[in-house]
Every structure is written in C-alpha cells, then in structure tokens.
Image (tube, rainbow, N blue to C red; front, side):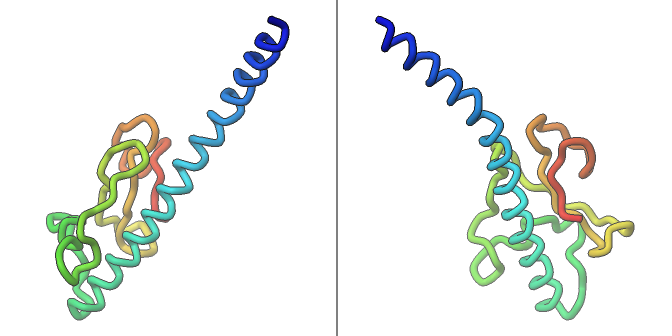
Amino acid sequence: MLVVGIITVLMGSAIFMLTGNLEFAKEQRARGDIQAIVTQVRMFEMKSGGVPLSQSQGLQALVGKGKGFEELPKDPWGEDYLYKVDASSPKGFKVYSKGPDRQDNSGGGDDVTSK
C-alpha cells in the first residue's frame, strides 16, 4: 500500500510539472507554424510581382497546388491562424493565433503573433 501511495504522489507531481511544459510546447509550435506561414506570404508576394496579400484574400490564397500549402495548419488550440494587414508592423502584415484563450485580440493579449 505504501508503494502505491508513493507512486501516486510521484505521478501527480510529474503531471503538474508537465502541464506548464505542454503550454510552452504549444506556444513554440504556434511560433514555428507562424514563421512557415510568413515565409509563404513572402513567396506569394514575390510570385505576384510584389503585390501584397490582401486581407480579403486572407491565408486561403496560399492553399492549393503550387501555392505553398495543401491545407492551412490549425494552431495547437484547434483554431485557424489569422492574417491581418497592419501598417504598423515592419512586414506590413501580421499572422497570429488566438492563443490559449481562443479570443481574437488582434495579435494582443495572449495571442501568438509574428512581429
């Protein structure tokens, strides 16, 4: 009985410690996905002669044979990545995930965003 109790305590503490690492891993995966999407947006701009991707086209313009993605990835929280034309950004646009709270803060709050 004592061994079972010790194992239970150890498993509980391991689960507690891994929970924080899981959120960190999700955020890092979102950053990697966003970087890949930003690269494809830049490729789109180069292929179209410097014409930027419009907000109305959105990320769906990157989907299809020879366009970059067969299908857009979902963020680690199961939501779509978002694209926003943003003149204040050095790139002229933002690609972002709504983050763990799944609330669209336009790249603010806990959203994971391209800078």
